[in-house]
Image (cartoon, rainbow, N blue to C red):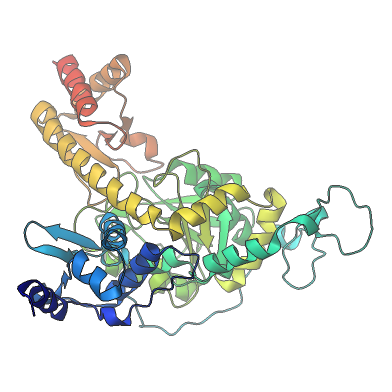
Length: 486
């Protein structure tokens, strides 16, 4: 045996994956590199690796073993690199990444309480929606007309649609069983629990309308996302601002205070103060909701962009009593004008949510949904998150450095573990009116913290963003602000 073959054999022996179990179908429509990528990825997700067992064989060795071109292996490896599963070490080879994407975003599970579902009290407005459906079929309006030549208006020629092709693609998507949410946010759901919406505000409005009758209480964080106050007010709720401490929303209440029907929270990254809700507060909140028949609306704001510390589970992922309505949006991850979000609701709530959605606007653009589905299933979504997390982390570090150097004499910067904004507290409160005036004059316009408050009385501060600008733009803006204040 030649030295080269002996060396390759030793590398294969130290490999972390049983590559002899890989099966590549040369007759399949799926390219060979995609098949290889998918099987290696699935193996890595299931594995547990130590420093001594995290090495992959070389592309040459793997190509030889599988009887395929080396370029095919390189394509699969490059995709795994881009998504954060692999890392290269100079002159050492290819290794499993220290933190897999699933490790960063997945969540541990709580089995403290068995899952129980009590009957859900639906709002009067939902009960009043005219409903001529049979069972739980979705209300498609006029397009739901039955068979026969009825000459009903606005019916397209659906018999000409390539249904076989569509069903094949649909089956591939549904086979993922909510893969992004289950794999990366620790959610527990199946496709029938997911409702596509036109963003977070619509998700909040639908949830409020499903559960609240006019005048019933809704708790929201104070300070908090200003649109939550507007949406719950629009839905007729009595908005009750709740204070925050370093662990998140404070759930204490006086004996005479009415119980809420719904509690709105941003546990992954509270906006605008930036704290991450502690695990203890999360479990306490779930216990409160379970004991008092309360629903929690979990806005998973900026969960993908956490920069320090291990991930904490989504509330929905540790909820065993179907108390959590989980919602997310693609606006911050992809681009704001893509008005796509999602709700994960308990099975008892899904039908009411669907009725409300069909009453509002029936559905989100099908082309955008299909494109996003392909973007996710083909791995681009995860690689984009990984790339943007790196960019945002670098911009965040640069902003902190420059801000402290240029403006540290006037502000104390509060840096959160996640998210795309920071809070700058004034060292001298009396300077607030002057600084506010200067920011408006020069066009560097951080938000005032008081803008996000209802009853909360906090010290003067400004909320700065850093994600959308390059290092040069960040430095130019901070220099402009610092020189103007002098």
